[in-house]
Image (cartoon, rainbow, N blue to C red; front, side, top):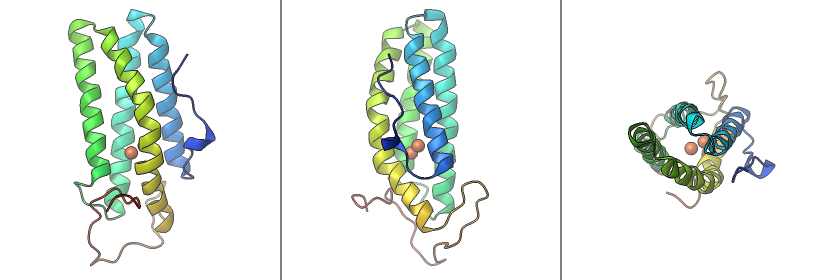
Length: 159
Ligand SMILES: [Fe+2]
Ligand SMILES: [Fe+2]
């Protein structure tokens, strides 16, 4: 059984972001289910890594549009997590280390709700505040041109 299941507590009120997060939770569950079948691990892992690459890139694009600095801490965490996932994928391909994949899946199940409820929630809040339409890129209340770039995640606990 998966260690992480979707609940409404994870919903952040941004439909495109929430749909992406449902997909992440589903692909993580698929990976955990695949652990018992060695041949199924590589494709399930590849699906999760590909999803995560696009998922993080999408949020990074939204942050750029909303006036975050390229080196903000949310994007930095995305890069760090994706690097670990790619390294685990590389080691699995080279050595067939399924235990490592299983450990990573367990860690991601703990990490994801924290990331969603802090960093992604702060991004969702900024999107709402700015009237940002994730589908079209239109923004009702863009930041002032002279506004300083946001280097934190935009949350109240992060400057
Ligand atoms: Fe996310
Ligand atoms: Fe994120």
